[in-house]
Length: 215
Image (cartoon, rainbow, N blue to C red; front, side, top):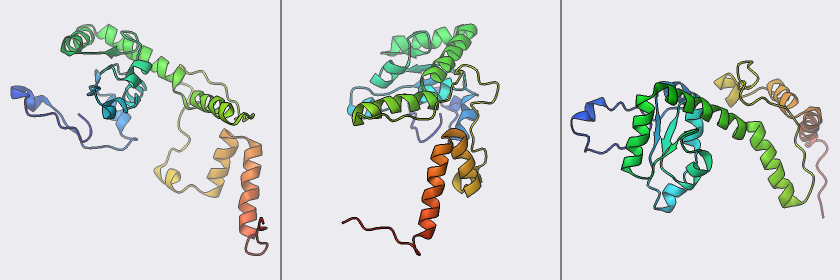
């Protein structure tokens, strides 16, 4: 169990078999998830709080090819294809059935984990979500917002093309101007970079050449 989760006191002689970890950073979470055979995401779904939870637990586990069994909240029902990319368990018998299937059939467990990985890369990859955001914003503003295009092969991550750009914690917290510029050029294009350079230079010149006041 990872994070501030209370497992309760009714575990009997199984209590010693529960391993608990404190809340970890997002950088360390994938390493911990790779040690899981099955990811469990139980929720109380008969209240607004439980239904407000996203499907992030499914996504995080799928990225390291770990299958998920989850409560059938609206978010998990949207994300998980039953018995294909994971399992939705409505009651105790369904939890027991899903657990038994994955525990007793290691090959099935691996297949579901692989299917979940492919599914998440095809539906939740940042480039995919950026395109969905572009469509949503265009529908709202009635304009033609066009983000820089980049083709991806969602299921192929062995070439390093999907590796994170910010590899250092220090770079992520305090990037230099050169690093910011390179990131913008690489992921947003030359036109956006030139606009950012102009804004930066204009702000530097503001003490000498103040911005015009709009009446």
